[in-house]
Image (tube, rainbow, N blue to C red; front, side, top):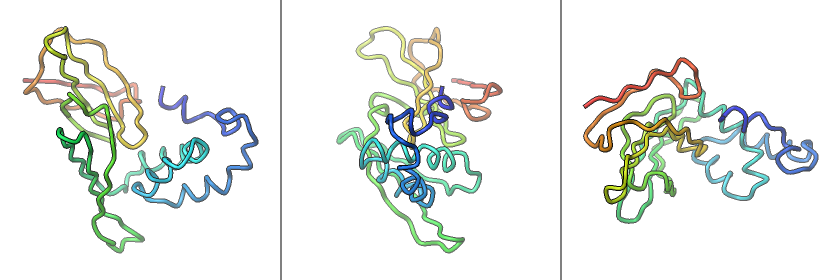
Amino acid sequence: MLLINRSRTMSQLDGGDADIHEPTKTIANRLGIIQLIAFRGVCKSWRAASFPASAHLESAAKTAPCFIVYNDQDKKCSLYYEEDKDANKVGRKKYELSIPEFENATCLASNHGWLLLNRHPCSGSGAGSLFFLCPFSRARIDLPEIPESDISGYVGAFSGPPTSPECIVTVAN
């Protein structure tokens, strides 16, 4: 699912000539994750031009780790990221963003740039839901319903990127 979206050409996304967006794609490829998130928010055209850069950053082995803190009161996330320019530490950066998928959800595990989240059932109405979320691209992969209606207090792990057919998910109490 994620790979299909990223494999679209620019002309499929906006109906125009892909060559028009080459300078925009070149700029996006030179940005760090924080700058790329801001870049993607400018307009649909820039967001579309940033897909290859986002895919590269998400899969890069040398991407610096980041720390995400979600605040239940204001429904905002703070992303802390250590910027690294050519192995010279530039310093920690803080970026605020809104990720609505975090509301009423608990993170059970993270791996390969993806989070395994459990969305709690609202006021006892049925089962919650498990899903993967990549907070940078906002890609989401829903998992099949599980028989347990409440898995709060559980922890999880997964073996690789959820886009891989070899990915194994484990949730335990």
